[in-house]
Amino acid sequence: MIRNYTHEAGLRNLERELGKIARKLARRYVESGGESAATVDAPDLHGLLGPAHFEPEVAGRLQIPGVSVGLAVTEGGGEILFIEATRMKGKGELQITGSVRDVMRESAMTAVSFVRTSSKELRLDPGLWAESAIHIHVPAGATPKDGPSAGIAIVTALTSLLLDRPVPPDLAMTGEITLRGKVLPVGGIKEKILAAKRAGITHVLIPAANEKDLVEIPPDRISDLKIEPVERIEQVLQIVFGRDVWV
Image (cartoon, rainbow, N blue to C red; front, side, top):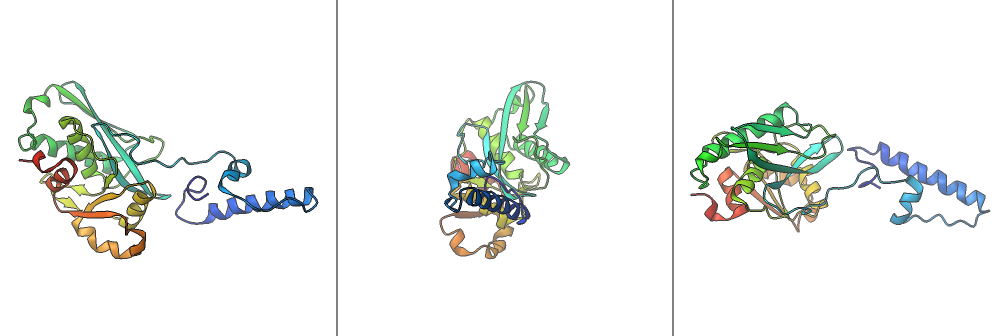
């Protein structure tokens, strides 16, 4: 119920859905003369509450170059965020779509600028920028997305596209970047890490400055997660693609 019917940070809607089930079970009990069983299992929810309101994202659904998994905090709590990048013929244009608001749009522009200025270190053809248009998309366009937390995920998706190397499907990340490649701290670490675990992620990259926030999470909840702090985007790219990716 929590995963598919009550996407919120609080418990109000959960209480409503539980009440709805209780009323339906009470009615069935009365109409059957006390013979109807009052037991509810997961398969019964569709008949009691209707189709699921939310379908959880499943990490690893795609393992192709140009896709990375970021982490964000929404009104419903922590969520994984797929970042997609593609390239086509053009003259250096940049397009960003997916109901992305100003702060995340600036993150995307900063990420693209960093990758462009790092073409030598990444062994990319400097001429490709003048003859290419870059499109960055964050799916689930009906959900507004804002906040400085997707910078390293955008850099990773774009680097994955240009190097033609897929990102490991069990890896997610959060963190903002500067034009100099420094990874900046972000908020909502607890919610993001728990969202990653819920989605099947096993390896999470967080800003080194956020390592202190891990004390907010009970150790048993993250004992099976590899949480790796990073200080610079070069570290991120070497963890994702191997140490040979940056020279």
